[in-house]
Length: 254
Ligand SMILES: CC(C)=CCC/C(C)=C/CC/C(C)=C/COP(=O)(O)O
Image 1 (tube, rainbow, N blue to C red):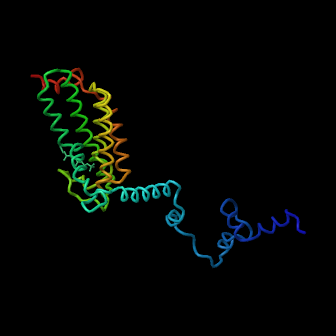
Image 2: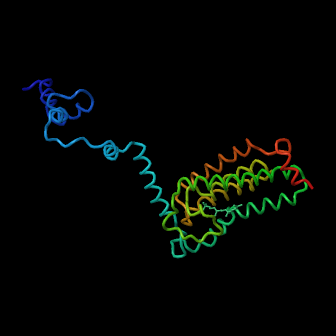
Image 3: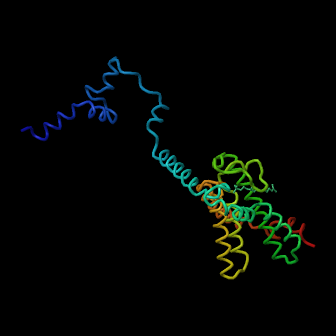
Protein backbone atom coordinates (compact mmCIF):
# COMPACT_ATOMS: atom_id res chain seq x y z
CA UNK A 1 0.00 0.00 0.00
CA UNK A 2 1.55 3.40 -1.00
CA UNK A 3 2.32 5.82 1.83
CA UNK A 4 0.31 9.15 1.89
CA UNK A 5 3.54 11.04 1.31
CA UNK A 6 4.49 9.16 -1.86
CA UNK A 7 0.96 9.53 -3.35
CA UNK A 8 1.13 13.30 -2.67
CA UNK A 9 4.45 13.44 -4.49
CA UNK A 10 2.97 11.59 -7.47
CA UNK A 11 -0.03 14.00 -7.59
CA UNK A 12 2.31 16.99 -7.56
CA UNK A 13 3.73 15.78 -10.87
CA UNK A 14 0.33 15.97 -12.64
CA UNK A 15 -0.08 18.96 -15.02
CA UNK A 16 -3.03 20.63 -13.22
CA UNK A 17 -1.11 20.74 -9.94
CA UNK A 18 2.02 21.91 -11.68
CA UNK A 19 0.22 24.73 -13.50
CA UNK A 20 -1.38 25.99 -10.29
CA UNK A 21 1.98 25.97 -8.59
CA UNK A 22 3.65 27.67 -11.52
CA UNK A 23 1.38 30.72 -11.13
CA UNK A 24 2.60 31.26 -7.59
CA UNK A 25 6.34 30.82 -7.78
CA UNK A 26 9.23 29.80 -9.99
CA UNK A 27 8.19 27.40 -12.76
CA UNK A 28 8.27 23.69 -11.95
CA UNK A 29 10.59 21.59 -14.13
CA UNK A 30 7.83 20.29 -16.42
CA UNK A 31 5.39 23.22 -16.17
CA UNK A 32 3.66 24.68 -19.28
CA UNK A 33 5.40 28.00 -18.67
CA UNK A 34 8.77 26.27 -18.61
CA UNK A 35 7.81 24.45 -21.86
CA UNK A 36 6.83 27.84 -23.39
CA UNK A 37 10.14 29.37 -22.31
CA UNK A 38 12.00 26.53 -23.92
CA UNK A 39 10.42 27.26 -27.32
CA UNK A 40 7.54 24.74 -27.28
CA UNK A 41 4.50 25.07 -29.55
CA UNK A 42 2.25 26.65 -26.82
CA UNK A 43 0.31 29.81 -27.91
CA UNK A 44 1.76 33.22 -26.93
CA UNK A 45 0.51 34.70 -23.63
CA UNK A 46 -2.75 36.68 -23.76
CA UNK A 47 -2.59 40.48 -23.69
CA UNK A 48 -3.21 42.02 -20.27
CA UNK A 49 -6.71 43.31 -21.11
CA UNK A 50 -7.89 39.86 -22.27
CA UNK A 51 -6.76 38.39 -18.97
CA UNK A 52 -8.71 41.10 -17.15
CA UNK A 53 -11.85 40.17 -19.06
CA UNK A 54 -11.43 36.52 -18.26
CA UNK A 55 -10.81 37.25 -14.59
CA UNK A 56 -13.30 39.99 -13.59
CA UNK A 57 -12.70 41.42 -10.17
CA UNK A 58 -14.97 40.67 -7.24
CA UNK A 59 -16.22 44.27 -7.32
CA UNK A 60 -17.03 43.94 -11.02
CA UNK A 61 -19.03 40.75 -10.48
CA UNK A 62 -20.84 42.27 -7.48
CA UNK A 63 -21.73 45.41 -9.44
CA UNK A 64 -23.01 43.58 -12.49
CA UNK A 65 -25.07 41.24 -10.28
CA UNK A 66 -26.54 44.24 -8.46
CA UNK A 67 -27.34 45.85 -11.80
CA UNK A 68 -29.04 42.70 -13.05
CA UNK A 69 -31.15 42.41 -9.87
CA UNK A 70 -31.93 46.12 -10.07
CA UNK A 71 -33.17 45.89 -13.67
CA UNK A 72 -35.18 42.77 -12.95
CA UNK A 73 -36.79 44.18 -9.78
CA UNK A 74 -37.49 47.57 -11.38
CA UNK A 75 -39.26 45.92 -14.30
CA UNK A 76 -41.33 43.78 -11.92
CA UNK A 77 -42.21 46.81 -9.76
CA UNK A 78 -43.09 49.06 -12.69
CA UNK A 79 -46.73 48.08 -12.32
CA UNK A 80 -48.06 51.52 -13.36
CA UNK A 81 -45.66 52.06 -16.27
CA UNK A 82 -48.57 52.27 -18.71
CA UNK A 83 -52.37 52.28 -18.72
CA UNK A 84 -52.30 48.61 -19.76
CA UNK A 85 -49.90 47.61 -16.95
CA UNK A 86 -51.01 45.45 -14.01
CA UNK A 87 -51.94 48.49 -11.86
CA UNK A 88 -52.41 50.88 -14.79
CA UNK A 89 -55.60 52.32 -13.30
CA UNK A 90 -53.50 53.83 -10.45
CA UNK A 91 -51.27 55.67 -12.91
CA UNK A 92 -53.21 59.00 -12.84
CA UNK A 93 -52.96 59.06 -9.03
CA UNK A 94 -49.22 58.40 -9.13
CA UNK A 95 -48.85 61.18 -11.66
CA UNK A 96 -50.38 63.55 -9.11
CA UNK A 97 -47.74 62.31 -6.63
CA UNK A 98 -45.16 62.99 -9.35
CA UNK A 99 -46.27 66.63 -9.66
CA UNK A 100 -46.16 66.99 -5.86
CA UNK A 101 -42.42 66.23 -5.98
CA UNK A 102 -41.65 68.17 -9.16
CA UNK A 103 -39.17 71.06 -9.07
CA UNK A 104 -41.45 73.70 -10.57
CA UNK A 105 -44.23 73.75 -7.92
CA UNK A 106 -41.61 73.70 -5.18
CA UNK A 107 -39.57 76.53 -6.71
CA UNK A 108 -42.60 78.66 -7.52
CA UNK A 109 -44.23 77.98 -4.14
CA UNK A 110 -41.08 78.88 -2.22
CA UNK A 111 -40.51 82.00 -4.29
CA UNK A 112 -44.10 83.09 -3.78
CA UNK A 113 -43.83 82.46 -0.02
CA UNK A 114 -40.64 84.50 0.08
CA UNK A 115 -42.31 87.45 -1.64
CA UNK A 116 -45.29 87.25 0.71
CA UNK A 117 -43.43 86.68 4.00
CA UNK A 118 -43.37 89.56 6.43
CA UNK A 119 -41.23 88.10 9.18
CA UNK A 120 -37.45 87.95 8.94
CA UNK A 121 -37.39 84.41 10.42
CA UNK A 122 -39.74 83.11 7.71
CA UNK A 123 -37.72 84.88 5.03
CA UNK A 124 -34.52 83.25 6.26
CA UNK A 125 -36.05 79.76 6.17
CA UNK A 126 -37.64 80.25 2.75
CA UNK A 127 -34.50 81.74 1.24
CA UNK A 128 -32.54 78.72 2.42
CA UNK A 129 -35.23 76.40 1.04
CA UNK A 130 -34.94 78.15 -2.32
CA UNK A 131 -31.16 77.80 -2.19
CA UNK A 132 -31.54 74.08 -1.28
CA UNK A 133 -33.94 73.44 -4.20
CA UNK A 134 -31.65 75.17 -6.70
CA UNK A 135 -28.58 73.34 -5.37
CA UNK A 136 -30.48 70.07 -5.68
CA UNK A 137 -31.43 70.79 -9.32
CA UNK A 138 -27.84 71.60 -10.23
CA UNK A 139 -26.38 68.59 -8.41
CA UNK A 140 -28.85 66.14 -9.94
CA UNK A 141 -28.27 67.59 -13.42
CA UNK A 142 -24.49 67.23 -13.01
CA UNK A 143 -24.70 63.62 -11.77
CA UNK A 144 -27.22 62.67 -14.46
CA UNK A 145 -24.96 64.25 -17.09
CA UNK A 146 -21.92 62.33 -15.82
CA UNK A 147 -23.55 58.92 -15.28
CA UNK A 148 -25.89 59.07 -18.33
CA UNK A 149 -27.89 56.04 -17.33
CA UNK A 150 -30.90 55.75 -19.64
CA UNK A 151 -34.38 55.53 -18.14
CA UNK A 152 -35.91 52.05 -18.00
CA UNK A 153 -37.08 50.81 -21.38
CA UNK A 154 -40.64 50.41 -20.07
CA UNK A 155 -40.86 54.14 -19.13
CA UNK A 156 -43.28 56.25 -21.17
CA UNK A 157 -41.74 59.73 -21.40
CA UNK A 158 -44.92 61.69 -20.63
CA UNK A 159 -43.56 63.65 -17.68
CA UNK A 160 -44.66 67.14 -16.65
CA UNK A 161 -41.99 69.72 -17.77
CA UNK A 162 -38.52 68.21 -18.09
CA UNK A 163 -35.10 69.58 -19.05
CA UNK A 164 -32.59 67.85 -21.34
CA UNK A 165 -30.74 65.83 -18.67
CA UNK A 166 -34.05 64.37 -17.56
CA UNK A 167 -33.74 61.77 -20.28
CA UNK A 168 -31.28 60.15 -17.86
CA UNK A 169 -32.41 58.33 -14.78
CA UNK A 170 -29.57 58.23 -12.22
CA UNK A 171 -30.28 59.62 -9.67
CA UNK A 172 -34.00 60.30 -9.38
CA UNK A 173 -34.49 64.06 -9.06
CA UNK A 174 -37.85 63.52 -7.41
CA UNK A 175 -36.28 61.26 -4.80
CA UNK A 176 -33.48 63.72 -3.96
CA UNK A 177 -35.98 66.56 -3.66
CA UNK A 178 -38.37 64.51 -1.55
CA UNK A 179 -35.63 63.52 0.92
CA UNK A 180 -34.19 67.04 1.01
CA UNK A 181 -37.55 68.77 1.51
CA UNK A 182 -38.60 66.18 4.08
CA UNK A 183 -35.51 66.77 6.25
CA UNK A 184 -35.80 70.53 5.74
CA UNK A 185 -39.45 70.67 6.76
CA UNK A 186 -38.93 68.41 9.77
CA UNK A 187 -36.11 70.64 11.02
CA UNK A 188 -37.60 74.04 10.36
CA UNK A 189 -41.36 73.73 10.73
CA UNK A 190 -42.91 72.98 14.06
CA UNK A 191 -45.46 70.36 13.11
CA UNK A 192 -47.68 68.01 15.08
CA UNK A 193 -46.55 64.37 15.07
CA UNK A 194 -49.24 63.17 12.60
CA UNK A 195 -48.12 65.83 10.14
CA UNK A 196 -44.48 64.86 10.59
CA UNK A 197 -45.40 61.26 9.84
CA UNK A 198 -47.29 62.44 6.74
CA UNK A 199 -44.24 64.35 5.49
CA UNK A 200 -42.04 61.25 5.83
CA UNK A 201 -44.72 59.10 4.15
CA UNK A 202 -44.98 61.59 1.30
CA UNK A 203 -41.22 61.40 0.67
CA UNK A 204 -41.31 57.59 0.68
CA UNK A 205 -44.36 57.47 -1.61
CA UNK A 206 -42.69 59.88 -4.05
CA UNK A 207 -39.66 57.53 -4.12
CA UNK A 208 -41.68 54.31 -4.56
CA UNK A 209 -43.93 55.92 -7.17
CA UNK A 210 -40.90 56.63 -9.41
CA UNK A 211 -40.28 52.90 -9.77
CA UNK A 212 -44.00 52.03 -10.03
CA UNK A 213 -44.44 54.58 -12.83
CA UNK A 214 -41.50 52.96 -14.63
CA UNK A 215 -39.56 56.24 -14.53
CA UNK A 216 -36.63 54.80 -12.59
CA UNK A 217 -34.76 51.75 -11.49
CA UNK A 218 -34.69 50.96 -7.78
CA UNK A 219 -31.04 52.04 -7.40
CA UNK A 220 -31.80 55.47 -8.97
CA UNK A 221 -34.36 56.10 -6.25
CA UNK A 222 -32.28 54.70 -3.36
CA UNK A 223 -29.28 56.79 -4.38
CA UNK A 224 -31.55 59.82 -4.90
CA UNK A 225 -32.98 59.52 -1.39
CA UNK A 226 -29.47 59.23 0.07
CA UNK A 227 -28.23 62.17 -1.96
CA UNK A 228 -31.15 64.37 -0.91
CA UNK A 229 -30.66 63.38 2.72
CA UNK A 230 -26.95 64.23 2.54
CA UNK A 231 -27.61 67.45 0.64
CA UNK A 232 -29.66 68.76 3.54
CA UNK A 233 -26.53 68.53 5.72
CA UNK A 234 -24.68 70.68 3.16
CA UNK A 235 -27.51 73.23 3.23
CA UNK A 236 -27.38 73.33 7.03
CA UNK A 237 -23.61 73.78 6.88
CA UNK A 238 -23.88 76.66 4.39
CA UNK A 239 -26.98 78.16 6.08
CA UNK A 240 -27.61 81.65 4.68
CA UNK A 241 -28.33 84.35 7.24
CA UNK A 242 -28.44 88.17 7.27
CA UNK A 243 -24.95 87.97 8.80
CA UNK A 244 -23.21 85.90 6.10
CA UNK A 245 -25.32 86.95 3.08
CA UNK A 246 -26.63 90.46 3.84
CA UNK A 247 -27.01 91.38 0.15
CA UNK A 248 -29.37 88.46 -0.47
CA UNK A 249 -31.53 89.40 2.49
CA UNK A 250 -31.59 93.05 1.47
CA UNK A 251 -33.34 91.95 -1.74
CA UNK A 252 -36.29 90.64 0.25
CA UNK A 253 -36.57 93.38 2.87
CA UNK A 254 -39.66 95.44 2.25
C1 LIG B 1 -35.06 77.15 -12.66
C2 LIG B 1 -35.12 75.88 -13.40
C3 LIG B 1 -34.01 75.53 -14.30
C4 LIG B 1 -36.17 75.08 -13.23
C5 LIG B 1 -36.30 73.75 -13.87
C6 LIG B 1 -37.33 72.97 -13.14
C7 LIG B 1 -37.46 71.64 -13.77
C8 LIG B 1 -37.96 71.50 -15.15
C9 LIG B 1 -37.11 70.58 -13.06
C10 LIG B 1 -37.14 69.19 -13.58
C11 LIG B 1 -37.81 68.34 -12.59
C12 LIG B 1 -37.80 66.93 -13.10
C13 LIG B 1 -38.69 66.57 -14.19
C14 LIG B 1 -36.92 66.08 -12.57
C15 LIG B 1 -36.80 64.67 -13.01
O1 LIG B 1 -37.10 63.88 -11.94
P1 LIG B 1 -36.77 62.35 -11.98
O2 LIG B 1 -37.22 61.82 -10.68
O3 LIG B 1 -37.55 61.78 -13.12
O4 LIG B 1 -35.30 62.24 -12.17
